[in-house]
Length: 139
Length: 122
Length: 282
Image (cartoon, rainbow over all chains, first blue to last red; front, side):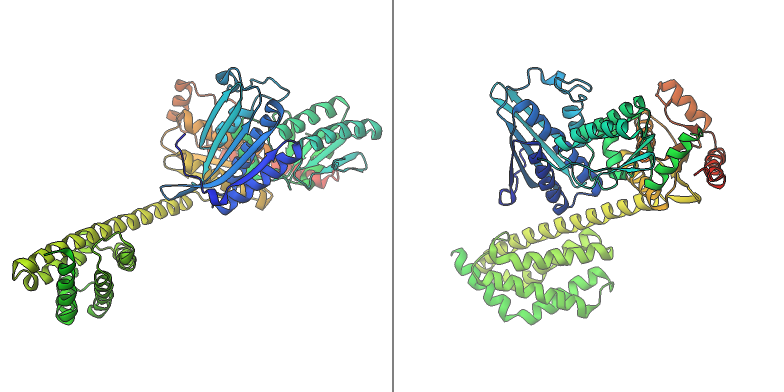
């Protein structure tokens, strides 16, 4: 994913270690999306993707930190969200991104579904943790 | 102690109106509460109003589908009502179609649908 | 001979002959624009610009991107926006800046010293001209994209066909941006009008490929999740053939050959609901 200089002045950091934290993280992301001109449908898609990824992080990565910030690319506003955990990592990324595949008790839509809901999706995973970065543009 | 979503009984119908953003524990609690209440009350129908929900992710979507299947086994039909357009569009994109769940536009239509089902006309 | 003395010379000349230069500049530009802008208005515009440039050069700078030229730049952006909106060509717009070069040429090319100053000033005006054309283009792009948006809105009316039945007649090519708008509008109308049936008529859609079929299917599924039924009507014979030939999975989409068939079907179901109401079943 291209490195969009995220507006660090308005960077929001939310630690996620309980399912209640996922709820407040979703609210933080929604407010950011509203402020940056995302339409209602785009907001809903971004927040839903954040919810999926936040839960993944909690269930498989033992929790982590979510950072969200507004970004701008050629005058087009968007919202960037990063999910970083220190879990055991995902052994087979391609498999994990396949529809219907799950190692937990989900329906296997978490990663692949979230990817479909956003405009940019980037995942890095290793033995020291997993980082997912997403961007949703206003248009 | 987390909050629980209230399950109200009106005649033979259980009404669940979800008014807050649910965390996963509340979703699981609701799932248990509902099946327990169906058995305890002998309810014939369940209406779950999600018109206040700004998002439905795969976890909540799965709970709705799961509830519909469980309550059917227990002899009650579940209608999910009031899904917002943006939520429906997002669920489709997410890959969730909730094909086993009956739906209605709003609470009133949901209750009507339950009565039609009870009368064997739907 | 250095830049500093060039600048001094420029400022002196520009200040000393301000009235003559301005009048001539306004005249030259005015001829170009052939009366489509009033002389008084043009004169005011150019005077403002002239003074902004003069002030900036007076601070000793010839760098069009520098802090000192901020005022000049914003005036130029405004000027090109206005010109783009009024339908002037890019050449006409940029010429408004370049014309100043012609005006200054006779007074600043008398000797080698002033010629050097003129060249430096010319370079500044070139930069400013470029900036003007960029701003002009940006405005045009904004106009085009806002028109495209308006067109999108215009081309997708959602109409109420009957109590409980809404319809969208689709005309033209369906892409994902447009389908998104149609979907949103249709689903919102279902909620707003408490309608249980929706009909998407694709008589006016020239081709249906896999992607379009996908979009239609998504709309049908979304409507169903909200508690409404969505039907596709107006499938022309050759489109039906394409669908089959391409092996597109259309199975889950309720279809009707014509809008009237779809409407009849929807009305039947709506009537059934109403009948149940009357029977006191409900």
